[in-house]
Amino acid sequence: MKVKSGDFVMPGDVLGVSEQFLPDEWTYDDEGYIKSAIIGNVSINNSNKKISVVPSRGNPNVLHLGDIVYGQITDVRGQRALIDVQGMKDNDRQLALPYMAAIHISQVKKGYLEKLTDAFRIGDVIEAKVSRIMGDNLDLNTSDKESGVVKAMCTRCRAFMIPTEKRDELYCEVCDRKERRKVSSEYDY
Ligand SMILES: [Zn+2]
Image (cartoon, rainbow, N blue to C red):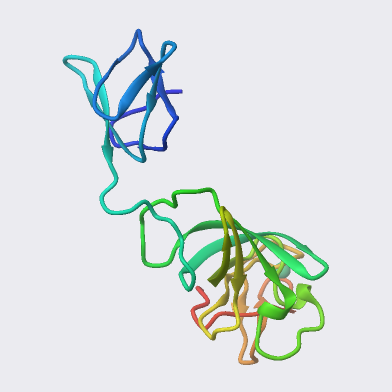
């Protein structure tokens, strides 16, 4: 554990030990461990060894209904795909919580989807809209045109695939094969 000035920290994060630093603004000594009291960025004064945390500007990045997020598919099982949420679209600030999310098969696209694996595969990067929030658990929806897979690898050779002229279809140039996905209009290739 080695923090430096500018590091993003959360309440309770250990910043160092009391032999290294003196707690200052928004930090405290908890039985020899210097911890952060708030969400913010570490500031270390090297001359007097005081360590403080500068509160994040504005609100911490808590998600709201309708927000657009990026994430990676971690599992596709039966009726649900699971997503590790990595950040908000058009917003560089870190999320306040390590959000986990799911997409139900009925929320993937307009119209009927027979198999969830025709829309998502493990490792796909997706863009999706937040449709339900339960603490750090989210439900997402990808039925909008811009939502869906923005980057995907071939399930056989792991090369990045490119969209075809057909809707919701990707092509692997290495294997000369096509795969189905719910492809976003913002697919990145
Ligand atoms: Zn391939």
